[in-house]
Length: 347
Image 1: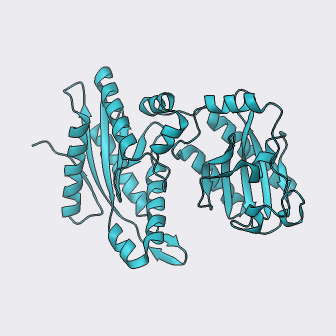
Image 2: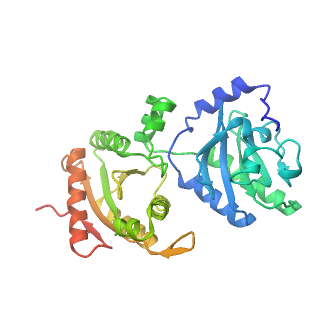
Image 3: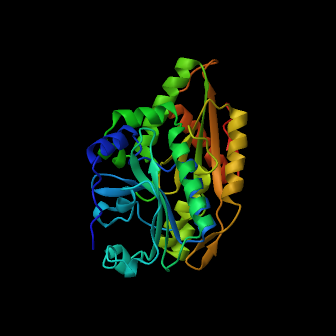
């Protein structure tokens, strides 16, 4: 096996990658959408956006693979970032660079690989958009052009990446290791500690600007039943699908965090009660739209959602009060039979 080579400009490349503050960050729908489309367009089992760090390749977005990172020395993407052209391996089993690579001989059984190097706005190749198959294949000229176009879309999305002020603060204040500790390891979204920090920051911002702020508390209905009936692996699959369906309906500057086993908190900056209630109904419709398919099993998803909003021109609310109000509305939704949205009503 040939370890992934190191580019001549490696130190500058790594410094540029770190300046982007994108490593060890939560899922972002803008990137997930590109990866889903790429996977579907090429008809492959795996597609991902990989960022090549010093000792690892970390996946900003991944579909079809249950990993968030692998060793850099084993990575195909580490080879791909040496040049700006597409890097294609039709059959890794017959390629002397990869035939004995553990990612080829073992899981996930990479046979075909095609990676489009991704260049950031400072001109450094930081990773790839790639497609992977467990069968050998060739790329047509049309395939190559499609992958080039999709890679350009990733670059444009990176250049125009927009996040809420509170999330930017977290990225700026915390080093990569600390950020990693604030991510949920299964879902790659913010955990409870991060969610509380984000809400505190957003409340301060809303008070400062005299703006509006909304919070949703969302429960996956019947999660214990899913675990008991189908097992924890299928329960994990349900949670992953559940969080992705929520995230796909959020704006770039909204945030989602996992507050408990099946409880999620969504923060909606610059959003009033009516708009938040409408968004909650859209999220619920998305969650219930299609059943989950998990290793041959098919089961539905549903959610109960509580919504609370505050207008800081008319008064103030603390983070604890906002969550408490959304929780109160969530409890009403559950008592009313689940699978619905309830809005907090001041007594």
